Amino acid sequence: MAPDARPFPLPIVDHHAHLRPGPSGIAAARAFAAHGGTDLFLATQNYLPRPPRSLEEYREQFSTTEALAKTVREETGLRVYVVLAPYPIDLVHAVPDLPLEEAEALQTRALELASHEVVEHRAVALGEVGLPHFPTEPPVLEALERVLEVALRLAKEVGCPAVLHTDDLDAAGYRRLAERGAHCGLAPQRMVKHYARTYLPPEERSGLTASFLAKRDLVRQALRDPGPWFLETDFLDDPTRPGVALPLDTVPRRARALWTNPALPGVDTEAALRVPFVEAPQQIYGLDLARETPFVFREGGA
Ligand SMILES: [Zn+2]
Image (cartoon, rainbow, N blue to C red; front, side, top):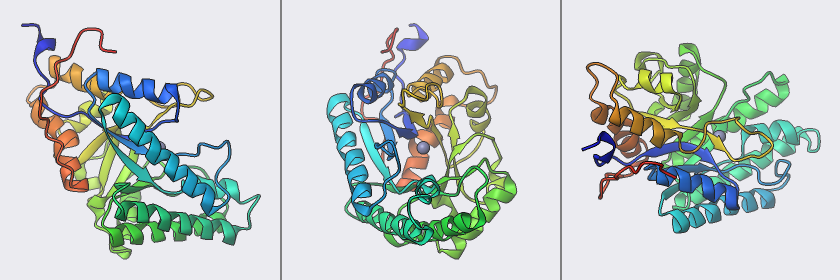
């Protein structure tokens, strides 16, 4: 029996992707499913060419994400989980047009709206929340720090994870975020550092959960990590920014490559991949994703 014909025994989860309504988003989701992907965390994004300027525009943005998740479920059979929040960078870009206090209040109200969607089970987490990944004027940065605290408190209140947008973190960066979470009453595990692109061992992550970018080397480093951790592409189907993130079929392709060709001595690939695909979804989101029917990879995939 060719190795590829062995059924893959686990769900395959991409913990962070963005899609646009329309054929390209559905095509990406289909490619993910065709390679064995089963579960997609769909984070909201601006669908307008500029950030929302009113709560009504955030409401429309969040509804678009929820409707898109429904379409993807219906058209591909994937399980899709919606992650909602006003993108922190929206505030930076809104400021020339809105007074800072108004932009800050808008973020806070949009976070309350997003947490309401979590309470109503239309979303599973608040994200992306966090701080800019580039130098920002002190008053704007201070406003974003207050908004982040609101986000962490709301996550604690409604009992969901906070998916964090930050610059690349070292041990001190993880520690500062964990302290911020503790200050807001949010358990560090429920703070998920999205787009983690440097591997740090658990003892340097201050209890935060890492969602590692599914690059080959990073996945290999993570395989020996007890977790919880996730894999993600941060896929963005934006025709104006090709190649800015990994293709959406990356996580299933990596899982498949490791499954058919385990290359790490002493690592049980199936046990290692249970961490991002079964254990972390259970521990962090309370999701039970155990696969009912093993997936058989077919040559050619999509
Ligand atoms: Zn993102």
